[in-house]
Length: 302
Image (cartoon, rainbow, N blue to C red):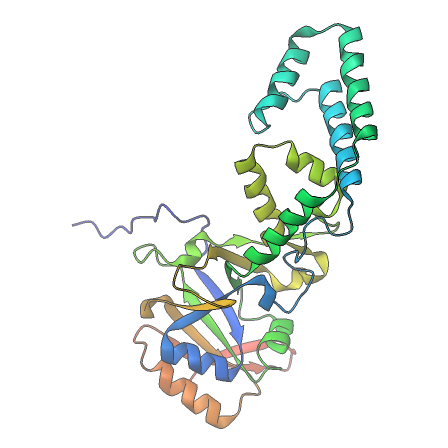
């Protein structure tokens, strides 16, 4: 009988473990309830994380002009693959690529310029879109994880200044662990395109399903380069019909918990309680983090 583990079709990476830094109080709640908190971006500590506002600071006029410029660029140099573009734009580009006179091409470009100059959008549609985005932010459910239990800055910022705990979770194909679908954050040196008029023009030229997927990817999996030390991965979901508020505590399977690291400055009472709770997870081990002479974290089993 084969003992080979079947790879889950939902697995997007080859990682075996992920970690979550929390305070001692939160760790005890997680271990007791066997749940992890999935939050809306409105709960995040970084207000520049997932955008709270769409096209913030941009006017409808700027976006219309950017759309005209983007369309002009497409006509001047039609892309080889147009499958993700809106059908009406594909038709125009395919006609251009098949061969049109220089005169007709010039008329198309001139028409786009005139259209952009003459339009004076009220902004009502943009306001409606922004309102919809703000309303739906609370529907997001995001689980934030990281790659290692050895990040000093993570211990300080997320584990109560070394007095907290780091929880290590296995990626178990047989259990179809939620974090099998985790994706790494992109730490961008520049602002994502959703903050610029030309970026919005590119999005608005795409099919709706492609544009929504692109917007979610940019908004959810991109952060400023200043946060790169976190080595963060995320799992994106949306709240279920019975969920309320800005977060939900979803259960995990006990075998998914592999390691529980207590911080170097954790209090003795907290350490004792955490150790007792870890004992209720037969496949998990408790370890103590300490700072060695080389000023690096080292771990010993409790």
